[in-house]
Image (cartoon, rainbow, N blue to C red; front, side, top):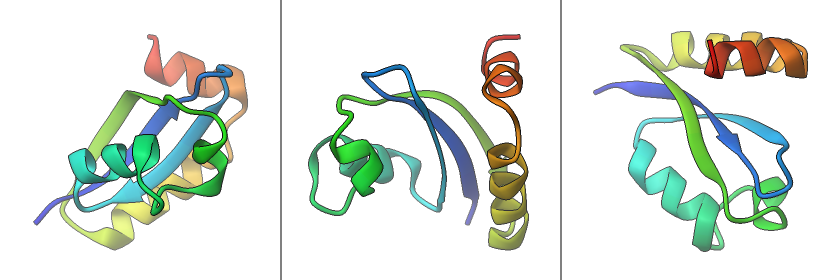
Length: 81
């Protein structure tokens, strides 16, 4: 089973970073379900702009934390090289 670290672009152009083991399901949750993060619920619709795949949850979470420490400009450079 793979785990994913992902970046969403919200309707207000802000970026959201998360981690999941089911990327398609999590994207549906962010866009329409009650299970989506509060941050994205009030900024819908969201668009998946970047993801990375990992073999372990620990590695995916570590990458998520690393991306969250980046500045907005660094995140934009990551998703739009």
